[in-house]
Length: 170
Image (cartoon, rainbow, N blue to C red; front, side, top):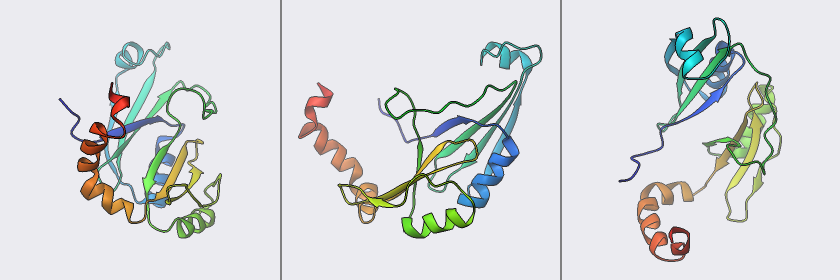
């Protein structure tokens, strides 16, 4: 058994419409589906203890096939900062070309950038920004490795699993 592909990441948002607008205006990711959950399901499945809780769920498609699943609950809880060293999700990431151009574009759009583009020890360029709720978004330019990973990624996984990374599987 193995996974077929990456499907989606879910984020809870403070304003459904503002989130849809942000991801469309900034990244050209369209909303492809919306569902309002019945109060009974919100109480039972999501564990929201309220008289008449609501939950709107939306799916925003990212070029390349990934999806952001967004949830807007009522009542809402206040957001919390997620420290890097806390176990759990820390950020989402988009593959882009030309991080310097993306950085300048985001700054002109008023998006909070928490770092400037920098080169990693392995050679790719990246930086971090935040959406309107403070969710971290990494923008990464893999350079030529984008093509290597897309074409040779399955072969590399096969070889590394049996070679230099074998001890991680034991």
